[in-house]
Image (cartoon, rainbow, N blue to C red; front, side, top):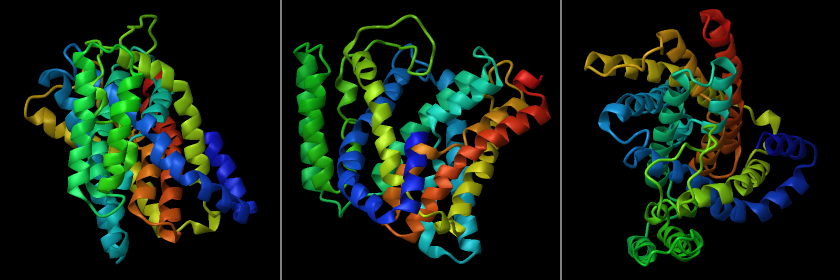
Length: 360
């Protein structure tokens, strides 16, 4: 994805006319069809994390990361709104959800550069990011309809898609393909005709795909692998989705560098400041009512974790394309989402200053 973003930036600034022709062709198949498999993988992680035996299954295990995730969304959203109102830009308030996202892959890689794999900051960040993904899917569906809502095709076709997936499960179908091609296609049509973003098509279908009670997860190093259909879906699509993300970045990240503007800095500040602040405050409040941080997760480490979670990149970029129509405001917001990768440098500097992880 980083490669796609770099190519897009260079291409859009050197040969803008040819870049616009390319993106005009790719935007629909990439954003509305191919990205369904990216959100499908995110949904897969949510399903298994919340299943019996999963990392988020009981209230006791899930409560603090979920509360931290809510704080990590409320903090940047509140800061975004405050900054936009303070400078009199009511026209950009619609983008408040853009800095709510956490890029699970980038944030995981950065935290692993800072702490050892067995450190409690790693699973805490992953659980927080999974909860963030779940809430983000709700926000995307609720806040950014792709067209005027049409409830009859939306509800009717999604209900039909779920019925198809349920029937496949009842009949013991052990391949994920009928679920994806059958139920997924009907759901995609329902989202598209109903006015919601069709990239969410697999979200209501995948819970019906047979799955194990728990899986190590896409980003957890393990030699064990179950062979249930949902895990097969993950392993089959994990590599193709990397190419999907390359084309997603190539299609959406090409903005003129001179398009840096006030929305860029609002998005970036909301991620870099609002994320760690929201996560830290929410965790502190949760502890006041009896929840406990994992043993070995100190406040300095939590702060570094919160800064790392400020990398919004993938989902923030997607939200920017959904929140604003093509133009200067969308380009400014995209640049802010892409520049959030600078949170990695801030996290490394904070870890060194606070003597966290490898600097301890």
